[in-house]
Image 1 (cartoon, rainbow, N blue to C red):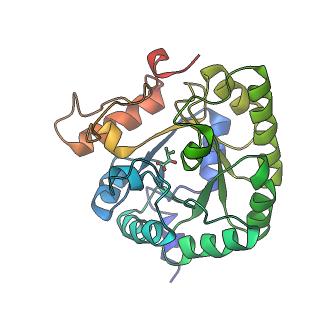
Image 2: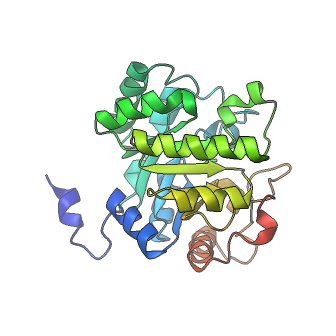
Length: 276
Ligand code: KIV
């Protein structure tokens, strides 16, 4: 009992929301990666990754689907449970998959599953104006929430593909307003995917909560990438924000450490990884 609290006194205390807030305040970049099993979880912990996400990208990189749409709650719970066994220090976030949050009640029920069965400490949902009430409801039940804005892979069939979002004044203004509203509703982290670097910088400056980006430029408070992308396991065309960290690494642990170093010292992402 209270092992978690005792570990806070150890040399490597677990990352909490307070840790991330402090990192934002002090300008220390947050290094995050996705993960899908316990063995990789152990390696990412040793590599000092701050935040680990059991993303519904598992539908593409583990299950071989073309999109994240087929991923179920049971899939995320299974992988999250495995990852949580491998982790000690990183904060563990789990994705609410497609159609697992059509109402605030279902969102709460499924968030509870991710936390109680999967061991997640925070849930992430693809968000916009339509999810503000859901975020407020989850936050009102003391669930830590990450609101995902920008490219929302669960909506690809509606939006017409994996495209950069927030281009043009109107779309950018709407995204800034949504980010502010989600923060006001109680989101603890905002994640921005595939948006112009300038917009990533603007949203990061305007929000008090930490902002983590993937293809959102160098100025967000932290970065996240799909683990299999940095290890160059993913086949096919890579998005421009992907960097292969295996290139100069002798093994997977070294590659993960190189990624953390590059995020922390600001050498990743470079201008070539961003969108105008
Ligand atoms: O599912 C996932 O891996 C994600 C990342 C792309 C952020 O949501």
